[in-house]
Length: 60
Image 1: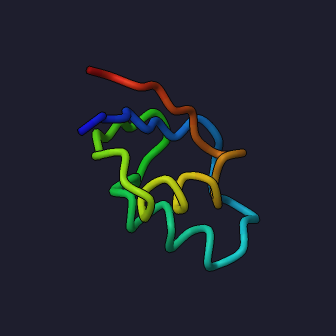
Image 2 (image 1 turned 135 degrees about the horizontal axis):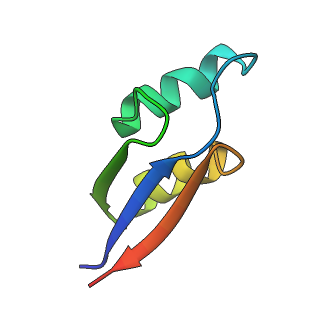
Image 3 (image 1 turned 180 degrees about the horizontal axis):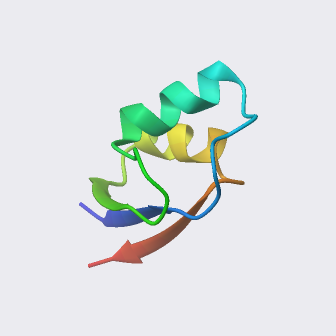
């Protein structure tokens, strides 16, 4: 299964509460933090919700 690296590049200040909770669910708690996840539909949907706050790279 493909893996993705998700990095928080923008602050969650002034974001709606559901977007803040999505970042926490992804494992992102600080700016610049990087987490690795499997590229399954649930994770991709969460990333899509906060796409303006994160950067995504595909790994092998």
